[in-house]
Length: 85
Image (cartoon, rainbow, N blue to C red):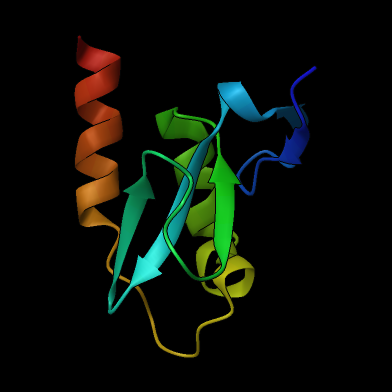
């Protein structure tokens, strides 16, 4: 059985395998493909709508516990590309 995590965008609970882990690397948000990068991580459905909800609610800064703003452009581009393909 897969462990359950909460999406920071829509706040719904889902199995870990259906979410992607993100971490703050300097001023940027990156996807942790293997879920092994050090530091505090957060979980997000790989959809543009959950990304936009998380951005609107300022959930990235809060969930990752950083004090400065984070650049999420790389993550947004990746999710847009996933939805297009």
